[in-house]
Amino acid sequence: MRRSTALPHRAAALATAALVLTGCSSAADGSAGGSAGDSAGAKITLTVGDFGTFGYQEAGLYEEYMAAHPNITVKYETAQDGQKYWDALTTRLAAGSGLADVQAVEVGYIAQATGKLADKFVDLGKTDGVSAGAWLPWKSQQATTAQGSLIGLGTDIGPMAICYRKDLFQQAGLPSDREAVGALWAGDWSKFVEKGKEYQAKAPAGTFFTDSASGLFNAVISSGTQQYSDASGKLAVKDSASVQKAWDLSVSASQAKISAGLRQFQKPWESAFANAKFATVVCPSWMTGIVSKQSGEAGKGKWDIAKAPVAANWGGAFLTVPKAGKHTKEAAALAAWLTAPEQQAKVFTKVGNLPSTGAGLQLPAVQGAKLDYFGDTPTGQIYAAAAGSIQPAKIGPDDGTAKTIITDNGILDIEEHGTDPAKAWQNVLKAIDDKINN
Image (tube, rainbow, N blue to C red; front, side, top):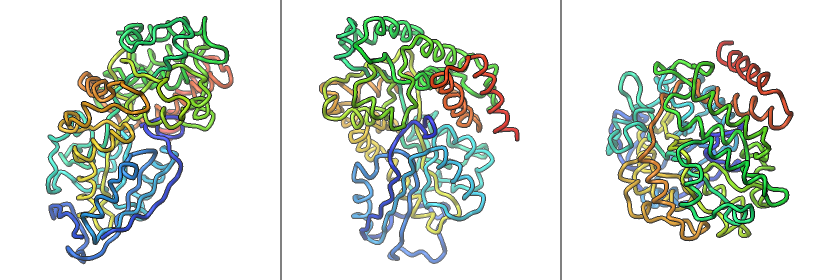
């Protein structure tokens, strides 16, 4: 999930498309809903609303699904700004109108969906062919309500690595072999910051060690087993050791001038990839697609992927089916198909979104994946292995809000305006309180 004003897990321009084909819709269990007038052969249109890059269009999945279901037309709309997407989604859920048949929910907001909004979604656990056990246990648990309803089907997860420019490392006198690079900071994010200072001392002119202190914050916090909320799901930012550690390291990186000070997922950040302005970016699996797209042909073969200092998961999402939809049975079948292991593997090999299903992670197409842009880097093995080391944290209903305020209002204020960190932190706490309690 994500990420400046846009949820980090995917950055793409607003896109709306209609894809037309025709066939019987896959039957889902009647408990998944569906309007009384629907019939197996009736022509219907299903809409999908998401944000960033879920990869379904890029992997040709909509066309594939419609070819197998000739009576179904799929239309999709992708928003660039994930925060605005979520705000609009909650407004439409409250109104019971204006909703897509399938709506994506970023992991930072899934606790709101399973909590106060739970009655707005179909129980997808009752859909034909769906078993919560197909997903990593912690992934399906995140989308399960207190009453036991599975209201979201996991799309991807974001196990952490570090993407780095081999050429810039070499020029700064650092090793460029991925195993040696991973050893530089193994076991501690503070080592990552210290190596950044070494890089900066000999950095090629005009370059920085890393892109963004906010990105570093998201990586560090994602490695904590207790993040923004306590074990009960109550927001505990002020008392969280993980938040404090992530804040301190991010501030340290900013003050040491090893960060380019860029706001992730915005135009200047995208341009900086192409201009080789930074040597590293914290790199959950979905980030690989962004690296290759924004760095362009000139960067091909110059990027590699090393282990992160500590196992972490940044991002991931779910597909849900609002009860207010006209074709909830067919929508549930589509969501189930899109998140099945085989489709998740196709998405990974196309855009780098790692499967959240156990079977998907083990498929040869994933385990043996090598993204052409990164040469012989065993991308699939690196991220699948990282996924196995993730220790998930409790996600509270206000985690996404807190994360956005800390990175966009707090750390970015330090990076862009030189605000005193102590003052920036107080501003963060006040902004969170104002947003959540007022």
